Length: 365
Image (cartoon, rainbow, N blue to C red; front, side):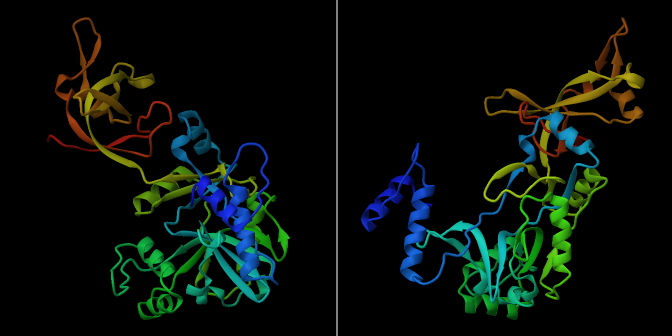
């Protein structure tokens, strides 16, 4: 998107007067240019709805207490698999269907639209007139040959279809069994009614009811999980998924805003580190090693702690534990400096240590 100075200059060149209040920002200039170009191209038609989808917060921005509270709350949050696609809203407007993106055109200043490249997603939607759905566009194949390039993953294939001319996009999809699918996870309008202020669980009920009216094989709901959520997250990661999205069950839908009640939690971190310290155990392991500190080496040869790894077996604790003549606990010296591959879910916001770290394998034996 152009910067503020460029937008102001373009408005001045076109003779567009923009009223602003307070600190100057790009939004009023974008809106004025959008309205101008629409009136020039479509003088007798109202501007179609320009709705930005709600944006996700990040699990990495949570502190440890917040992350733990969300994981342990068995009723207030649901999770869904994070889909690695292109975000889009599907608008059913009478005899017209629009599929809009998050990207604003620098020519028309309207949200980019994809429906001409995806005619198969426009079929059998008449019973959803007045409905707006939110979801991800995903190509079912990783390898798509466009003639000039071959994609290496599903996201690249999806973007290649959307970036092509309508004729080429149809040919790519039909010739390579690559019809882009629409994975739906929310609903903003239901048969003409704005439902954004309803709690998420109520909207999901309306979404399920709406999708039951369809027979379009290329439109489907994203699965929802309400119990055993940390375990479900790990299973999705272990199965090769990108991650999960955690959503507060009573939250509204806030178009265009980045919110804290939809949180993306991506695949974890894997890093090579070495042992630099320990913590004594507690409770039943009070006389043994409790956790091992791992660090990484910086460019200046200093070391930075990145993770505490616990959950060792009693046998492992026994091997790690040593006592001096006074009975004071210390770490078996053979462990200091020992290298290992460490895996965790993400970095804590403040300490920047890997949370829920575990050892994948030792590297020196």
